[in-house]
Length: 453
Image (cartoon, rainbow, N blue to C red):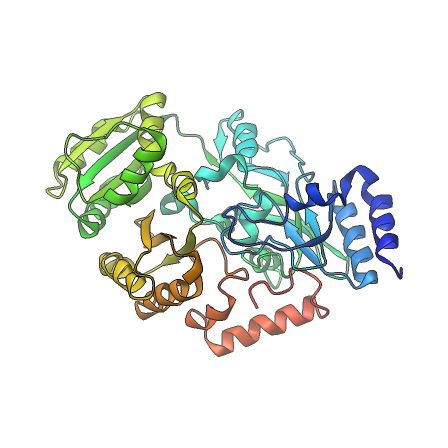
């Protein structure tokens, strides 16, 4: 293979000509990330339908010396799914395998390109559910969720995506396949390749299929939106809820400025007669209606300034809209600098107070909007009117987070946007180990070059 044309012909012979996209207008839709901040240029887009086709595509690109960028739902925030110039963009959107649910073991095998919403619909018909959920469920893919070890709204109860994975089928940089889909809860035969690929951001292998652990579908649900004075009050209320309610599944934090933006963009009514500085949204889920138990705990929380509770689907959805509309409302207001970070829970209130000051010091006209997952100390830092100062803002936020012994990436990965800051969260020895693993599995740097390292 000596020309770009021969590579395209080889790819077409593997996946079919209809699934090798070369028209620049069509390819352009894959070259910009979801935030609009990161852009690249792809040689072409290829859409394999199964693991064998993925392997053949990888071998063809390797033979041609052309790197590969892997893209799922393209809902990431750190530029990891945007192609570097000249890379073949491998889209996982046709890896949509959905095996029958194994009800006995509460497991299912699915393709890496299946969206979270499709997976939820598939398993809920069997009385089971997925342990991870977030607002981008209609677009994000399961393979991308594992590649970034996504967390979302249910980490408090079920853990991150890594905790849901019992097996993986992946293609390595040389085109070889590793397949462990038996789903054994106990299997101590050597290195855990499943956990290694989880969080690797497509740099070690392309996830084609997964064996996932499922959780019981809880029909009894109750959502409360709680008005509070500050972040410290939210942490205190969540602690009490966590101690007394095993049904607690989500605890989301947002603030008055974020709520104002959401209401401006969505025209939602104010949730309470009086505006408060901070808001906590919690959800409990169990076999029976947990509303009475939730109310009983809230009545014992002196920090609660006001609260509203809903247990019917329509009411729950209406309360969740105040939190889940944040991302779309921020994007509607402009191109944000988006940073996903975490700090130890005891430091969360201090970090929330310090972040706007740190941002203003480098970008005085910036408009920070914060929200996140309370129990994990996870903050989504969104900074509007600061794209021209993106690097300065990133440096200020990430250095501040590191000063609290926090992480520069809580659930969206490092990508290309944060790689120069990896040393703030990982020691030189850890980064050296990562490089050794990358060089061993992908010595030519074929997969997602420039991502993470």
